[in-house]
Image (cartoon, rainbow over all chains, first blue to last red; front, side, top):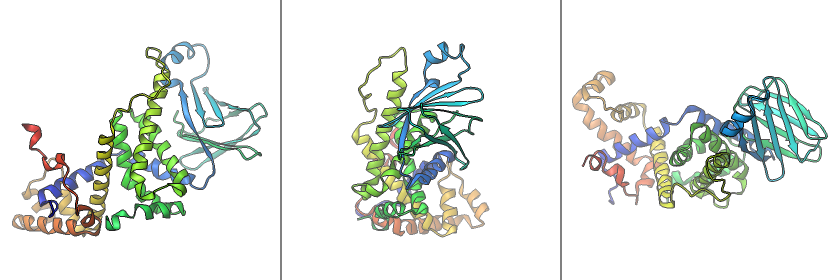
Length: 151
Length: 206
């Protein structure tokens, strides 16, 4: 083995290496590179902990009765953001409630800012272009960002 | 150790310092590792996207305080596993037919499997970097030689406009350059071929 790989082994290994990279969807790589935009943004990450589209009982029971299309919850160590997507609005509740500003950011870099009222409620219209993520800030220094949201 | 290739610690330092190109290089090298682990957990493409974004965001957050930057592949593998388990746990909690356990689902891939994925990812990244060092002529020829299904020498001869008889010697020369490239020579030293590459096409048919 001291001599390393022979030509056939090396060519086979190269083939495998190229294939391992080429089979990845371009979007998978692109999103990973774009994550760097969050470098030096001192925000706490809130992760998706509930998604109604994965919940069979939700879609059966709720969907037929309300205008709600999708419900999502993002949770971090200190906060939870509950989202409800209706046909026209993106409605949200932040817990614990605190007044602030929430901003939707699309992958293309576009942003829309909306106030969060003193009971932690906010509403966005129109619904941001998917995928997007939410960035919540308060005067007290809260800085929270959700994972990407695809509707 | 691995010569130029061990510069993952340097890439981490540069990325922590604000260098997007270094970050992109980290992604190019190790995205296949994150991917392969998600595949081991049999996640849907939606869940893979979820896991991947969390993993890379966590890395962005931790760039400046990784305890051992050179061990980044191991960190990525572990973090990816945790995120895969988180996604599976979230899916279970809302499965009304299943149990609603709070404990972690058992890891679907054991440590040796993950260790192998890390080694494979490192080797593949070194091979791709080595390939990138080659002259365009060699890259063209080798690309044609690794296509699946393989191209005939007659077809390669016609496309590259070289005599069929010179393909063999050129193949040998290009592979020698690949082997001696900065990225790969240090890596090959002391490494042995993994069984599945060594046996390519042999054992499976038996």
